[in-house]
Image (cartoon, rainbow, N blue to C red; front, side, top):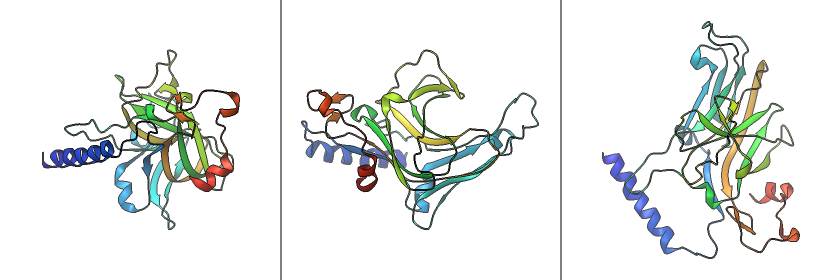
Length: 240
């Protein structure tokens, strides 16, 4: 009960500051969804793999000497002894589900932003970015392939929120309803290419942000081809 009231008091304080500083013509341009700079930050994350159901893959989340998170482990294709499972080989990490308080559910609102950006250094394997919003079905996850351009080097990856695809237990859902963007719960990364061997993905932060011309799904300026924002990856790698 004390923790709940403490969270509520902090939420009221943060909300009051936001209202006091509000600029209704130029909303917040970015929101840090998750970041890891020390071992204490790892408390906000959960890791998992097919080992949880009897498989043989492993997943670890550590902090490097340079103060970044490292998601690593080993993907095994060996099947669990339970004959109900016909395939194996996956690993994941994600943030903890939010904790509610008196004035808030603890969720964050992605509708205020157009893009999700991740600062990462990955190997050549195919990773997915996972978003969990408030849904009736607990296994529903919005996913997008993490488009790595320079394996082995730090880079900033940008994905528009409207490009995420709804999946359930790893299968694309046919109906594709819009995500409950005002009630985003968790963000995570996963690997399920089912290729035997080690993997390693480092990340510094994950942010939701707008360009100078966008506010969520709206345009700050009238739309013209000249004003269409294009991803300048070189610039983002230096500035974000």
